[in-house]
Length: 126
Image (cartoon, rainbow, N blue to C red; front, side):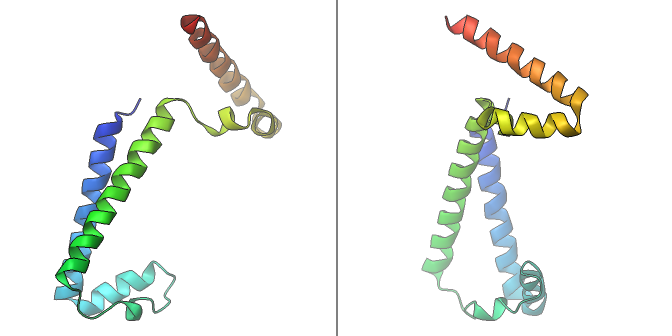
């Protein structure tokens, strides 16, 4: 199980640090930043669309929005993960038929384990 607060805090901190490092790279070594930024978009010249100078308000605003969004995404993601929202629990018939056609022994083990977990959860709730 994931601890939602710890996971959200760590992803938000990591995102903020990456943003700061990329900003420092953009200020110190602009060509390397452009190469790295454009590499994310398969070499398209996207870095030329960014402003040469970033205002203090835009820098802080972007940093805060990035951290808040990363935190919220990580918290929701870990909470859903802890509740057992996996692909097989969302669409059991379609996913199980796909798995059974390719990996029968694995599907049987996963299916029986999942059914056992669900049954024990229902018994505890009743």
